[in-house]
Image (cartoon, rainbow, N blue to C red; front, side, top):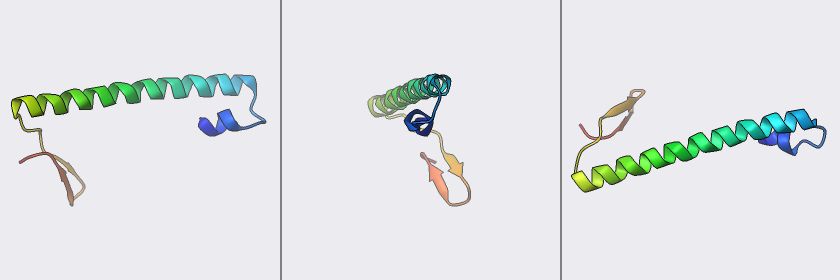
Length: 64
């Protein structure tokens, strides 16, 4: 969408749609960042461990 917004040949309609999509994505990204911050603060203040998540066979996240 950023490429569409920078394209000098993009129509006004394409630019409006690209702006709408990027605004929604930015809002969702900010919401997720807030959730992550709140979870980290909760874990720090309570000592609560996070759930273990696996990605593929080699990557693990969290505590066992």
